[in-house]
Length: 233
Image 1 (spheres, rainbow, N blue to C red):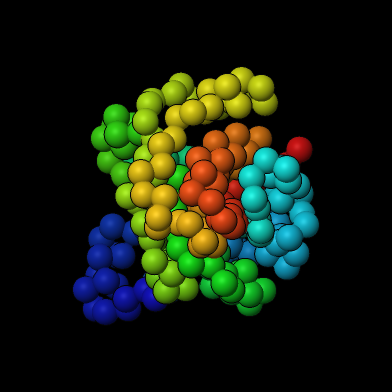
Image 2: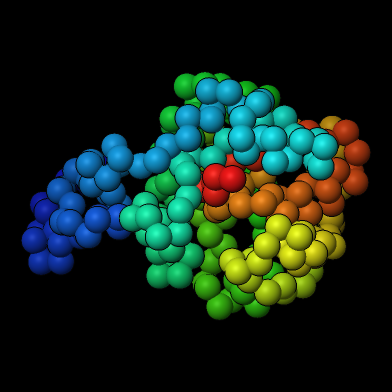
């Protein structure tokens, strides 16, 4: 919740904060998003039917998927895409935590997190994380964890190699680009568990599938998927 102390109000007067989406000034009660942009976010509503929706079908037959839900539809040039862009490229890890918590609070109403044991954010390769300063998926995971109480583990699986950006690649190139890039280090921690994988944006599902297939090697693993954005096909 926003701190409405005298110091916070004074800081808002000296250095007013802006909505990430529209750029308008935020009120003292608002964080990251203004109320209007929050209302207008292209929410998917997939948490209501997390077992059979457009994103869940991306993973059918590829990983042992249980539930899938993205928070909103993602379009690269839409105003709402600023949330992802600022999170990844403008040194705004706070956006990830904010969205993760907001998403989790909304999804809890549909019992999305019931039975899940552990959160694993999709790992970044070390070089990329040093360049960015943080893993954006971990920031989202922290927000989800704050809202649900679910533990996060970042030591179970790693990204072994740096692969080129997925942004300009087609479906088949994306699959090839992430094949074999993950390594399962502690299979005993996930065997017999229901894991929640968290990523920022799901397009073809190639990254999630590559990570999920590696986790599945532990045996008897259930996987659910959560993301901020989903590119509608």
